[in-house]
Amino acid sequence: MNTEEALKVLKEKGYKYTKKRKDILSYFVNADGYRSAKDLLQFMEPSYPGISFDTIYRNLHLFGRLSILEATELNGEKHFRISCVSHHHHHFICKQCGVTKEIDTCPMESVTGELSNFVIEGHKFEIYGRCPACQVS
Amino acid sequence: MNTEEALKVLKEKGYKYTKKRKDILSYFVNADGYRSAKDLLQFMEPSYPGISFDTIYRNLHLFGRLSILEATELNGEKHFRISCVSHHHHHFICKQCGVTKEIDTCPMESVTGELSNFVIEGHKFEIYGRCPACQVS
DNA sequence: TTATTCTATCGTAATGATTCCGATTTGTAA
DNA sequence: TTACAAATCGGAATCATTACGATAGAATAA
Image (cartoon, rainbow over all chains, first blue to last red; front, side, top):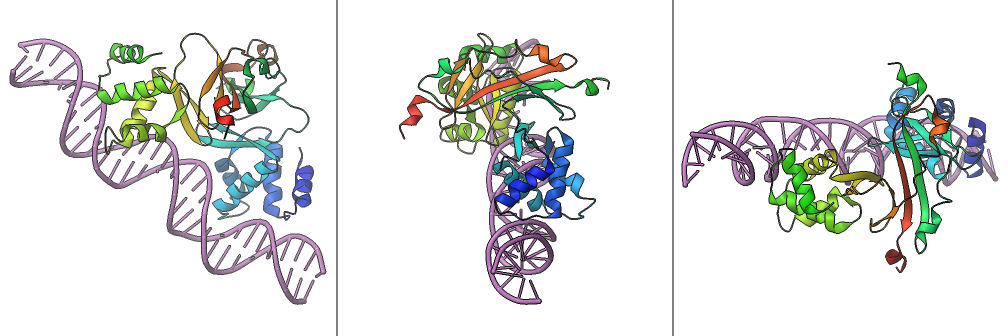
């Protein structure tokens, strides 16, 4: 998803346009990996000195509800990345820089047989490690 | 893993036997599902009024390091279950009661080809939903 | 059994991430 | 431009988790 699409979703749902929201969105669009609330705060601080925690968390949460961002937990902190709307897939996540790589394999098809009588509401398949760029150090 | 095996691991590594530790271990052995620090605290309180947070968290962390417990993150809280030593597998996890069911499918074999140049350090495959017992309500 | 030593636990304070709230500001539609 | 709802601010509150000095308790050997 790109910034324009995300802003369109906001508008359609009746949420207001603010420069802060646009900047948050373009931060995630350019990141192409998982980022924490703290990362975002540090990015926003220079342009908006004294920006409130509330603004950061409220918008992250809102964007999550609207499926503009997707979230995962990495060592005790929620991390977010711009949503991949194209097709269902999973991610390799670099533990050091948070960059992601698409994994097209989804194990769910071969699993449902093992779970008759269970209601399946979601699943998570993530691979953790180091991306090529983070292996030099 | 059962309580005796777990106590043996502790002894081998030079950690002391205490009744609290035995009770913590049998709690997880009998649970056969994921439980939070809070769940454990509530279980321990009646037998040990005023038991310290420190004891709860220190032991959970210790047991995790010794691979007696395995951990996962469920809605912002760490949850633990007794370790399955038998063979590599994943879990279905009931969102309501935390009960788990083994999933023998592991997607990693079919994935490594997509990740040359990436160092793989771990992976997570979990399925979330409702177990048969929790569907009645 | 007793002394010694090292670990475990207690009680509580500190930390870190996140949420909440009343007051104020700012988009937006009329 | 006005009016109103939504967004933000500033900061306190909450929740899970960690840290720490002081005390209690398990293991070991004399």
